[in-house]
Every structure is written in structure tokens, then in C-alpha cells.
Amino acid sequence: MHSSLIKSILLHLAIGLLLFGTASFHTPTPKVMEVTLNQALPEPDKAVSAITVDQKQVEKKIADLKKQEEAKKQAENKRIQDLERRANEARKQREAEDRRIKKLEQQRRAKEKERAEAEAQAKKAREIQQQERAKAQQAEKQKREAEDAAKAAADKRKAEEAALKKAEQERQRREQEAERKRQQALQEQMLQEQLAKEQAARNKIRQQQVISEVDKYKALIMARIQQNLLTDAKMKGKQCRLNIRLGFNGLVTEVTSLGGDKLVCEAALRAVRMADTLPVSKDRDVFDKLKNINLTIAPEF
Figure 1 (cartoon, rainbow, N blue to C red):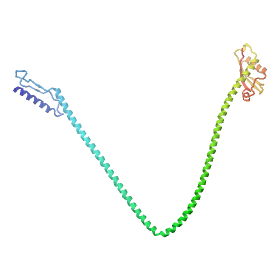
Figure 2 (cartoon, rainbow, N blue to C red):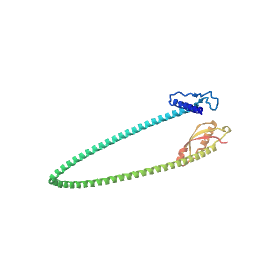
Figure 3 (tube, rainbow, N blue to C red):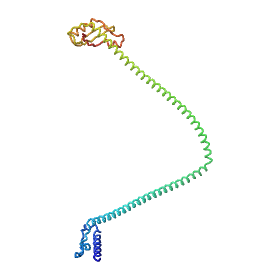
């Protein structure tokens, strides 16, 4: 029993010493503390050969203490920041209150100034009123004269207004007339543009008709020349280009070779001269495109 009591006392003493040694963060990492008890006792289960403090438990305890200290520091920092924030808010509120008081003071002074000015004006008005009452009789005469002058001015104003009204009516009439002419000119312009478009469309159709007629008469002229063309086997695959000038009735006034095979050119010139007259249109526009034409003559076999 005494042996167990001694063991318990020594164990608690060792733990207390360990906790006391780790209470400061500047204490080096504690080493394992060993307590050797009564090695001569014969019974293994009652004798305490050594009490060893677990290194991991010691480190855990140190870490817990550090966390607690850090938590305290953070709480203190937060408290200080909160105090600073509240101090800033109080300062801002004080400055805002100062500005409000200053503004109210300015408004008060402005109102006092306005009141003083109003009183001065009222005093001046009373003085004027007194002067006016003293001059009542003279003012009555002046009033009658002013009424007469006002009537004359009113009559003059009415005459001027009548003249202005007449001038305004004349101006509006001129503007309406100008607008009517502008609208008329615009309509005429639109009509001219429409007519121009229609004329352009008709010209295009007419041009297509003329081209078609020209092509037709060129084919007829070519056919007439081919009828009179004396061919030879040596001409096969060869050709000649001619310029032909015609009179209004189709009379050949001039024919010229523009180049090509000599035999074909001679035969083509001879065929045109033999024809004497070639088919032409009575349409002036078509004839203008046929009276001086270039044709390529190629013998047909």
C-alpha cells in the first residue's frame, strides 16, 4: 500500500514538473523524463522501474498551449482593430456633426441677413408710401394725363397690331404659295424622272430590237455573199475579213479587204461586187449600224 502511494505521488509530481516546464514558448522541446523507483523491490507488478512520459503527449500539449496563445493574440488584435474602427466611426460622426452645425450656422446667418434686408426694404417702402400720399393731388392729375396717354398708346398699339396681323397673313400667304410652287416643282421633277426612266427602258428595248434586226440583216448579207461566192477546195478552212459600205437602198458603195487568205479575199470581193446591192433595213437606226460593217467571210463546203 505504501509502495502504491509512493508511485502515485511520484507520477503526479513528474507530470506537474513537465507541465510547469512547458508553460513558456521559449522553453526548449522537453525531453523524456524518467523516474526510477525502488529497483530492489522483488515484485514486478508492484515495483515501478521507470515512469516514462510519452514524447507525443508532451508535443501535443505544447502545440495546444501554442494554439491557445495564438488564439489569445488574434482575439487581442481583433479587439484592438474593433476599437480603432469604432474610434474612426466616432471621428467621422463628429466631423459630420461639425459640418452639419457649420451649415446650420451659415443658414442662420443667411436668414438673419435676409430678414434685415426685408426690414430695410419694408422701411423704404413705408417712406415711399408716405411721400406718395403727400403728392396725392398731383398724382391724380398725372394719373389722368397718363390715362389719356395710355389710351392714345392703346389706339396706336391696336393699329400696329392690325398692321402686324396683316403682314403676318401676307407672310403666311407667301409661304403657302412658295410651298405650293415647291410641291409643284417636286412633282414635276418626279414626273421628269419617271419619264426619263420610262424613256431609258424604251431605249433599252429599242436598242435590243435594233441589235436583233442588225444581226438578222447581217445574216441576210452573209447569205447573199455566200450565194455569189465561187469556192475552191484550196479555200477550205480559210477566211477573209471585209469592210462593206452601203447606200440607203443597199447599194454597195465600197468594199475593202481587211486581211485574210488571198484566194478567199479575191472571191469575197468579187461576190460582193456581183451582188451589187445587199439587204438593208428601212429602219433608220438599223441602217445606221449596217451602212459601214465588217464581215468575216469563210467559204462553206
